[in-house]
Image 1 (cartoon, helix red, strand yellow):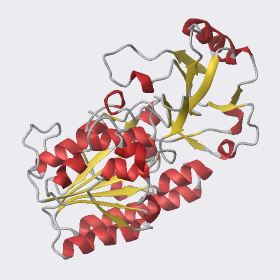
Image 2 (image 1 turned 120 degrees about the horizontal axis):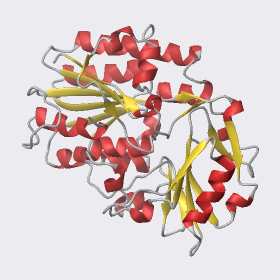
Image 3 (image 1 turned 120 degrees about the vertical axis):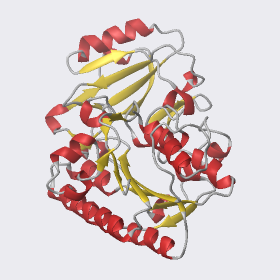
Image 4 (image 1 turned 60 degrees about the vertical axis):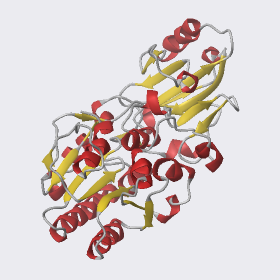
Length: 355
């Protein structure tokens, strides 16, 4: 089962989509969907002492996977479109843009004009539902409300700004108390932010996990039993120590490389025109074959080949790549990482209450 199956199944449960559900859910008038950034299945299992209530949720599948690369923009785009990155075109953290011949950051590098011009190449099912008059509420931090990414994912939906997890749950409960019904997507970024800053093994992360646990418990306790409550994530997180930092960019492996995108756990290489992919791949394998897998994208009938790199450099467990030409990059301070295909990064929970 995939993250792509979640929203389409919610729409069927709400009676907004007549197609067969990918996940069998009973008919409901309201669904609350918690999307917890960075809470992979392994992270949840390892922190069960701090997430007792969340861990008690009914699993809807034993093996749910996110997308590759396992990064937020790609995963959230898959969540709302019900399609894979090779369809919707949000194929990583920094993705190749043929218009500018450079990599563009999907979280904060897009413009509203990019979005309006169809940067995401599959429709958001939430936008489609809202345009048909169905009530869709997105509850997230106020700083995200005016972003291009929010517009791309949730255009037409009612955005409710709330800072803390407690405020987000309060916002949903207040809407319901005022008679609002529909789909409520609650986006929680707190754990991912803590993981990047100080790691999933930190007290900061566990404190935020406990806060999430208490607020999910509160939400379930105060909602009617006919309101379905779901919780999933966009990816998991792995802590990488400084000893796992690999510098690239200072040797012969850069010959023929036009630009480097992706993220530290999974670089994306764009090559100069006419340069042999096999030759560059050989150089990278010679230098980094013990810490990374180097390979070209699989050939397919996808319409987003212009967004794909010529080569992926996917770090093995315990490693990340940083550009050695940028020794003072603030990104080097990140502890928690994601983007690869390890089980910790790729396996995500899909839990339910009030089934």
